[in-house]
Amino acid sequence: MPRVRVNLKGKPSDYGLHPWIFKDRIKGVIGEGFEAAVYVKGKFFGSAFYNPDGKLALRFYSREKEDFTAGLVFSRIETAREERESILGFKNAYRLFFAEADNMPGIIADVYGDGAVIQISSYGADKLRREIVEGFRMAGYRWLYEKSDSYARRQEGLEPYEGWHFYQEEVHEVSVEINNLSFRVPIGGQKTGLYLDQRLNWELVGRVMGGREKVLDAFSYTGGFTLHLLKYGVKKVIAIDEDREALDILRKNLSDNGFGAKRVETFPDNVFEMLDRFILAHERFDGIILDPPAFAKSRNVSGARRGYFTLFDRALRLLEKGGLLAVFSCSRHMGFDLLEGELTRVAKRLMREVKVLYRLHQSPDHPIPVYFPDAEYLRGLLVLVR
Image (cartoon, rainbow, N blue to C red; front, side, top):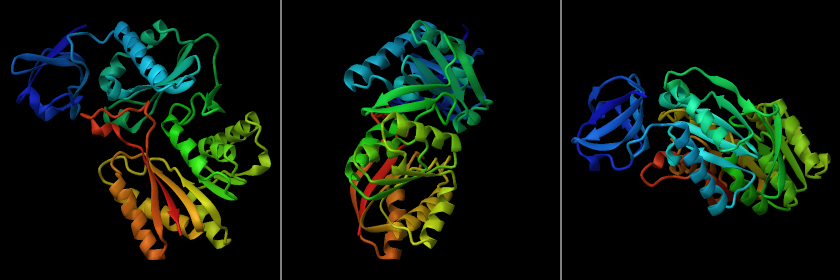
């Protein structure tokens, strides 16, 4: 496969092992193609995907002189399996590839049982889809589905793509076990079907809120938090999500795990509107979970801050004294400082005492390389409100 030779400005120490190179750091390009051999001061620096029209021009997949082949994908799968299964102890469902963090730039892969769902969001990976698919076939997976519809993909000038690559028999829903609970995963659902980045937070929040009388699970999706709350003895859960199909699966998950349907009330509705209705109805909760979709897609976080201010305002009005609040942000530009800043503003306004018990993060199968802090995107707070 033809490889472009790209020469960078500066010296190797200017870049370290950061996986991205922006267009303004390129000194010269020789040839055409979407795989590049990258050089600094005449010395080989790495192999990368190359997007000639993108602001983010280079994404490294290796520091060796090697093409991106099905064999390389197979090798990366073996390495990632070892890290997730042997080191982390995740067996049935986990993130196999976390893009740049696993030297697979713009490639997400989540394993569910004997198959996987992938997302492709980089120009080079999109051009090399056939090699990615063949690598998964070589690794012995029984099915492979792609759900590539992310905002990052649009930034690369790519159209959404969704569909099957291979299967022995078509799968619409699979069951997996996480934290000793059974989860149904809708193939083709939101993201890759399940929010695996929350698996440790599901367990921790469920345990800390265990035994409470009534907990609100806002943006519940298929019930990750709801199931764990019930597991730890919460008497009643109110689950809200606009996705009716997700709530249908939540109810199936209740049955699969032997939880009585009467312990959960579901509302297929807008969370902000429901919170206002609860306030007008003088509802009270001794636990609230807020796990919204990404409010900030770029460095402009003004809209996100307004959204969290509103959520915090409603939550603190609804919480009993001594109540617990868990809140999450999956926007990498919304750091702990901004999240806690909005919570502090509301606490001062309503004269509520708020204590941070835990700062929460993404699951370790979504690792954060020290040279690539952009890989950290999920942040959460578990706080006590008096």
